Image (cartoon, rainbow, N blue to C red):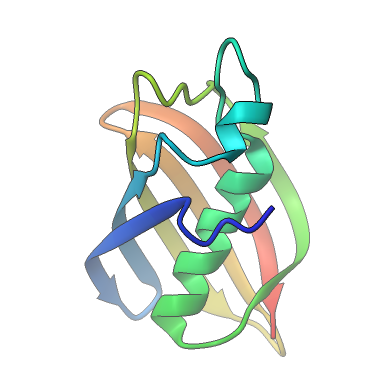
Length: 120
């Protein structure tokens, strides 16, 4: 299922090595009809796609997740309760990859963490 209209984001800050964005989730996206019908939960793969998409867009590169040293989903994102998230990405270039530490949160509540490498 394409995630084309699953989310939008507003870039808050982008300086070398750091990205801060506000992510707005479309709570009416068809994805939620199957995950899960009685209690919608944002799938982890969709959260990873948000991170990949924002990083790709800001760096103007077509990136893919090459490896993940750590992916943690710490708390479910229920679209009926939460539809805006803060995304913080700290990144640096390695040989042919971009290493990134990413956090999706709302105020002091962390929903997901990803430490990995992205490549073109």
